Image (tube, rainbow, N blue to C red; front, side):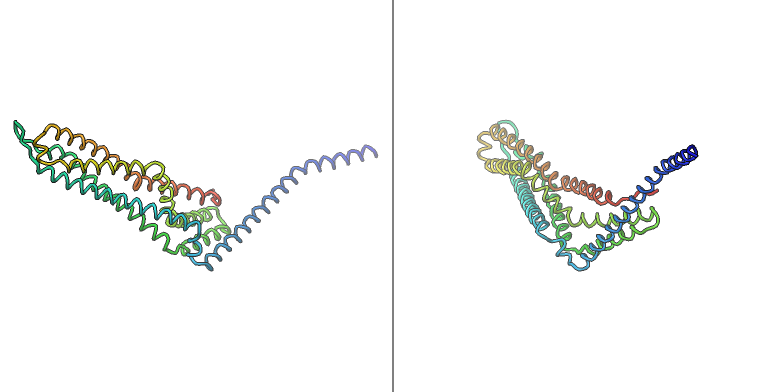
Length: 303
């Protein structure tokens, strides 16, 4: 009897021990399932709350607050200042072109042959004309950025945000992984569009103002002052001085021409980087950043 009782106890103990891992797995699965349901419920409530807020508040209340207002103000001031600098550089280029045109009419007669002072300035004149075109393109680029920022501030984006949030809400209750993925990808694209339209240009201006103040502004101002001084030196040359000392006049003219060429190339580099290349680089970075932020938290891979 004792042996039978011992065997029965041993079998019960072994069965209980064998079932324990399965019970633990079942408990873990139950906890995970409950956590998923809780997260889905919280996400649903959050989305419904966001939709309610968008339906009750205006775009002005949502998109225009103290934080965004400061960014917009600094960005607008930076674009206005850059536009002013680009316009000043364009005017300097046109004035330099006019000065060179006047100098090209001068002809001095040394002991042998004739030499036109304008012949020395022909390469500079060609570069100045191209510089004028570059500055015109830079000015147009800044104007486009200002227009896009005004559009992003004025246009009501709630009509795009609401459908995006509704798509995410519907995806929570979708039955297949494929439909969830498609709905959320469409919603992310809509939200990415809103973020770019609303914040791309202000953020570009904000970052650009810091870069310009730290690295570009002093170099740009120095180059413009140098071109202005060289232009004044060239315009100060008279036909009498050139005829009296042709070698000295040509030497000074070549020196000023080389200075102008170097400073114009520097200005082209600075303005093209600041107003064209840098905004495109920031826009690309914002697209990548916003894409990561929007896609990562709720993304579901297709099976």
